[in-house]
Each structure stands twice: as C-alpha cells, then as structure tokens.
Length: 83
Image (tube, rainbow, N blue to C red; front, side):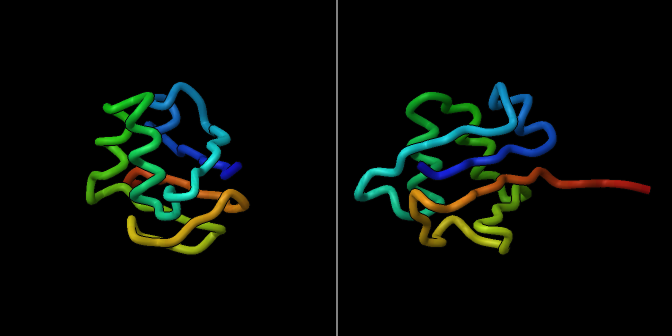
C-alpha cells in the first residue's frame, strides 16, 4: 500500500493526516492516485489537482505524471506563507 500524507489544510479536508491506499495495476501515477481518492472524496481530489498544491514522492518533488508504486510515500502540500 502506498502511504499518502496530507499536510496543512489538506489534512483537515481529508479528515486525517495520512491514508494507506492500495494501488491497482493501472493506478501508477500521481494523477491516477488522485482519481482513486476522487472515488471516495471528490472535493479533496479536486483540491489536490489545484496548481498551488505541491506533490512529493519519496521526499522528492513530483508532478501529476510521476510514476508511483505501492511502496512509495506520496505527500501533498498546500501553499505556505509567512512573514
């Protein structure tokens, strides 16, 4: 199972900071993972597709087309501001 982490407001929207999601044979990109999430939570999935949301796969910046597997850790990060 892939470990999916949600940081900041995304954790609130997801109802928790982490989920373990089993990827099927065809769910091998970040975009496909978001589609799997959409089956349970369309609002969260649409938020994850926003241009301001960053994705990290195994601690490296990634995009929606990045290949993933059940052994990966995928994190979604909202924009951060500070002053």
